[in-house]
Image (cartoon, rainbow, N blue to C red; front, top):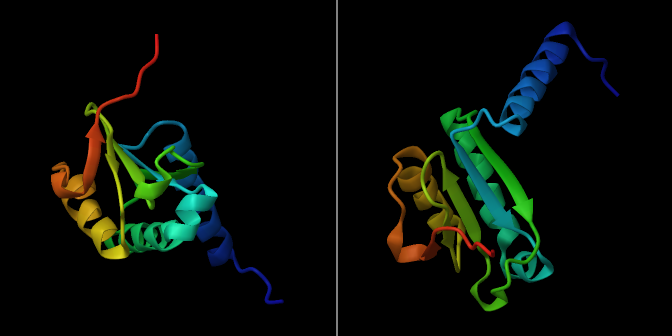
Length: 127
């Protein structure tokens, strides 16, 4: 096992700091990939990898990425929910890697929801 260098420790510190900032609410967007067994079986893991790849390629550090269980629409998996600051959440369905990359570019980066892939916009609220 290689020894850690000072530069390795600095990188770990910066990565942890960025992750902590996102958890504390310092992000402008949050993307939830629904990773129930139905979502994973339908390809949610590849959708997640495509999103993480786009974040890394573009150097984006202010977008929180998280997972959840089944969203309740197993036949519509893989699904993701994109929440932009001060905008209603948008739930996307039947995703592929290519669709997730387009959602990242248009919705996460430019703030324009991709209506052709969206199931619903807004919150599910119970009173």
